[in-house]
Length: 272
Image (cartoon, rainbow, N blue to C red; front, side, top):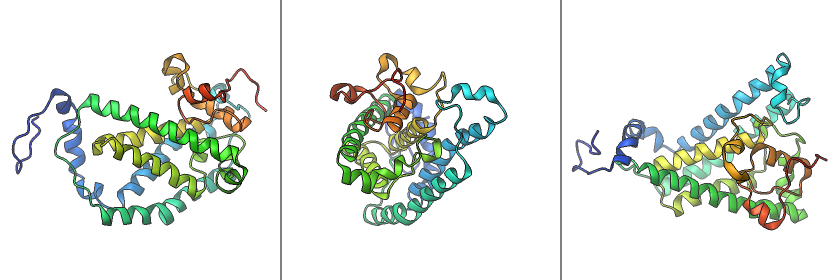
């Protein structure tokens, strides 16, 4: 496939661009939806719920399939409907009442045009890695401050710790300030790096998945922290310890900042 459009001059493409071009051409066929002010909210909610749903189903099945409990960090805990529904309701409410108006203002002030060419594969992967590292650093600082300063914790972050044992739908159970902070970091990084729209979409999907996995409460053999070598990635066990102890493991994904500042706690330490 060539990287050209019937109304555009021919553009020479590298083999890496050609690899992603069919996917990008397919996405561009939905250009009207992607460029609409509704797309960010629809995309975010749909992706988030789709990633949470398998873990919700697993929590239900644990009552009938005890073998599944061997993968749960807290085998005797399963979230109830009284815990699940408020989390889902708050996510929907915040996206409709707060995220959508901001998205609408951004759409009205800066309408985006989709490029015809796909990004190079290696550039896409590099940008996603850099975005994750930047996000990890930014949220580490934000998270540490909101635990060390009592007023910040009580006012903005305490709501996220209301569920003592984390579960998938509790991932976005947070104050609107925390939600906007994470969204700001997310968008700032892809803007600073000049990411292609396909790269931005991919990064948002990866970021949502890693966040949900961190809160899922399931430690599978294929969990991300088991796939990344040398303990560089904390994962679900790492973040569950944060919810248990409150004073450790402030980075959302990687472990280097907690190691450097002495706030890393491993699973060998018993939970409080």
